[in-house]
Length: 103
Image 1 (cartoon, rainbow, N blue to C red):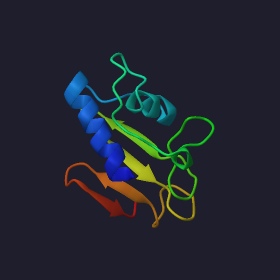
Image 2: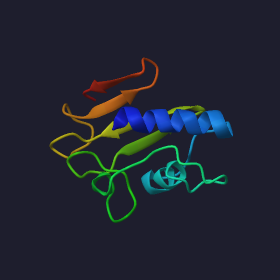
Image 3: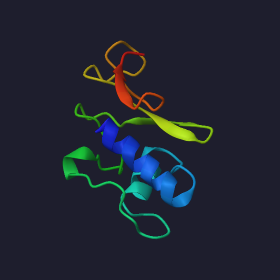
Image 4: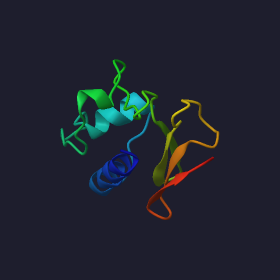
């Protein structure tokens, strides 16, 4: 899912010249068609979102989006223990186009 989110953010950037901004639910809304041209950049199943409209990882924790001055957002999952910033986290690595494990 992290790779799909990162691809959707990059495709959004190609179309609009900027990355979607805001918290998880605002970014999700923009990627799911809540943008000025109603373009769907990402398709999700209901199990991929919580009632707040946030995109969640396989363990039910909302992904963390960190915006980085014109770069693709860093996207993180808290991992199985559902706690961010420890050894079981999964993070996008936009500079290398891969998902990394660890803080």
